[in-house]
Length: 109
Image (cartoon, rainbow, N blue to C red):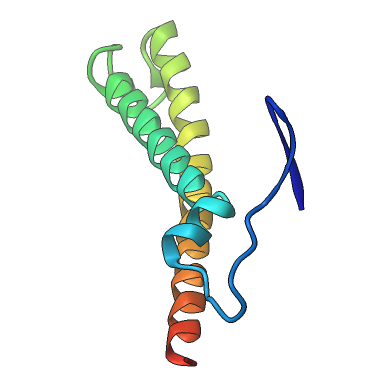
């Protein structure tokens, strides 16, 4: 499979016959690490927004936050938390799959 660089088209390096990819190679190639990082930081943003809603932006009562900024932070938290969990869970599932693949390739030698 060819990919473009600044200097033109290059071929991806060929792997040796029978050489199994390592866990780090698989994680880099299929976007696992990017999913884990993105999911983690989206979760952090959601937690920070939820904490700000409950403390700095006036708190939350039965009827919702007391301030406009509290409502905005609540909406950000309610968006970031489920999406961050899903992205992080997808990254974790891919990491476990890659771990299983490299483990089965190493044991078959």
